[in-house]
Image 1: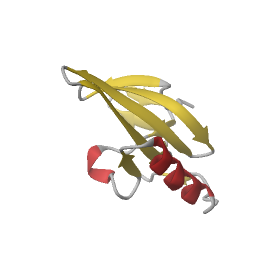
Image 2: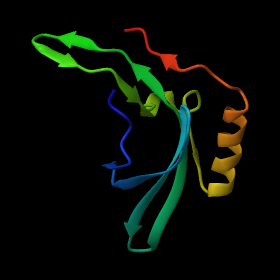
Image 3: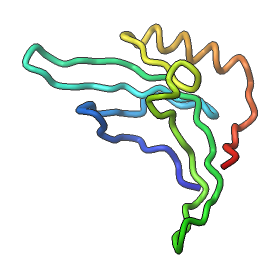
Length: 103
């Protein structure tokens, strides 16, 4: 299965996976600006995308992060690690089974 990346770049931010437990994770996102470094933290519920066949290609089963439109339901953005940790702990206490997307 394809796992979520440990690091990636998107929208001018650099994302680094700093914590993961079961299907929950926290990414630190940073951007260097003329005014200094911007740090934010994203909490995601990781979902499983099943194997798919598109034309002559195969997309293997893999983990999936929320897209922009899914924030507030599957992911949250916080200005501090402390607030992100609070959301992470709240999610972990729910004991969800793995979430499989049905496409």
